[in-house]
Image (cartoon, rainbow, N blue to C red; front, side, top):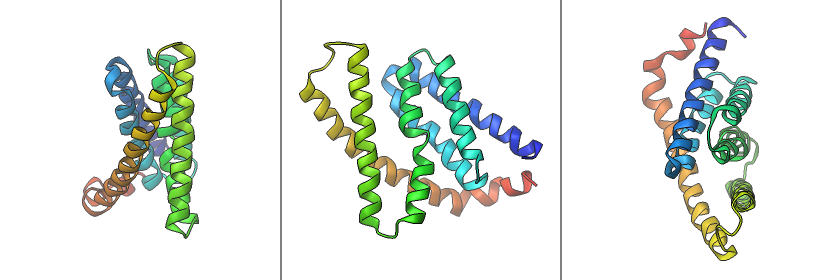
Length: 173
C-alpha cells in the first residue's frame, strides 16, 4: 500500500470515529451516525478495493471501542453498519437472484438488530419488554430496507456526479 493510500485510509478511519463519537454523545442519533460512518466503508469499497475497506472497518471499530463513550454505538458499527457495505457489495456481485440477495441481507439485518436489542437489554435490565423489542425490530427492518436503497442511490450518485470531480484515482497514483 503506498503512502497516499495509507494516508487516505487513516483520514477515513478518523472521520468514521468522529461520526461514531458524535453519535454516541448525541444518544438519539447513534444508529444514524453509525450508518453515516458506513458511507466511509462504501467509499473505500469503491475507491480503494481489496483489503483496505476491511482494514478501515477494523481500525475504526477498534478505535471506537476505545474512545466512544457509549460502547453500544461502537457495537452497532462493528456488528452491522461498518461491515454492511462490504457484505452488500459481495452479495450483489455474487448472487444473481435479487430475491435471494434481499433475503440474505434482510436476514442478516434481522439477526444483528435482534442481537443488539437483546444485548442492550442485558446491560440495562428491565429497560424494555419483549413485545417492544419485537416492535423495534420490525421498525428497524423497515429502516434497514430504506438504508439499503439509500446506500445504493448514494453510490450511483457518487459514480455519476462526484467521482470525476474528486479525482481520487489520480490522487492515489
